[in-house]
Image (cartoon, rainbow over all chains, first blue to last red; front, side, top):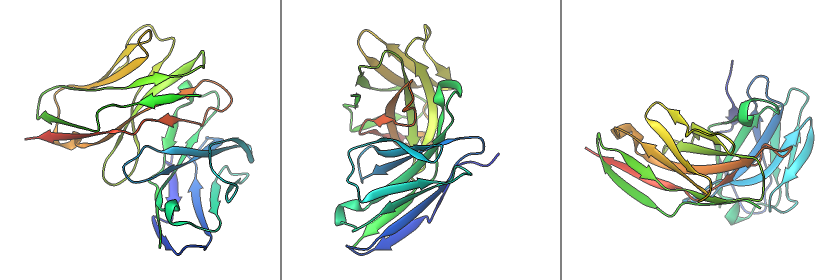
Length: 114
Length: 116
C-alpha cells in the first residue's frame, strides 16, 4: 500500500505565472483535500474533491482551482501567482466511511513566488 | 464554523519528562473528531492520535495520550517520557463527521523543543 505522494517537492515561480501541483492519493482513498500552510502557521483548507467534483471550499479566490481524476489523483492549479502564495501546499487523502475518516498527508510541495 | 486555539507558541521540556500541549476548540457540529499531528522540519504531517466526540475514554497511542474534556472544549496532548526526536511542531485539528469530511481545521501549532 503506497502512501500519499506529491510532486514536485520544491518549485520557484515568479509573480503572475501559473503553477500546477500534483497529488496521488493513498490506495483505496476517494477524497482528496488541499491545504496551504504559510510559514509559521497552521494549514488552511483550500478545497476538497470527491468523485472528481469539488465538494467543499475554503476562503480562497477562484484562481485556485483543482481537478480529480478517475484514479483519484488530483491537481491544484494556481493562476496569476502572488507573493503571498509562497507556502507549503499539502495534499491529504481520505475515504468516506473509513474509521473516523482518517486522513493521510503527503510530504508537501514548497512553492516560492518571487 | 470550526475554530482551534493553541495558546502556546513554544514549549520546552527536559528529555524523559512529560509535557502537555494545550488545545481548545469550538464547533457547531454535533459529531466531530479531534486530531493531533506532528510536523518535523521536513514538512510532512504525521498523524499521532484521534479522539471522537462521543468516545467515553481518552485516547492513547503509545507515549501519546489525549486529555479530552468535552464540557470545557479542550483536547490537550500529553507526551510522556519525551525524546529528542519529539522536537517538532505540533498541530491540533478537528473535522466534522459529515460529508465534507476532508476539511480539517488546524490551530497555529506549538513548537516543542526537547532539551537533553
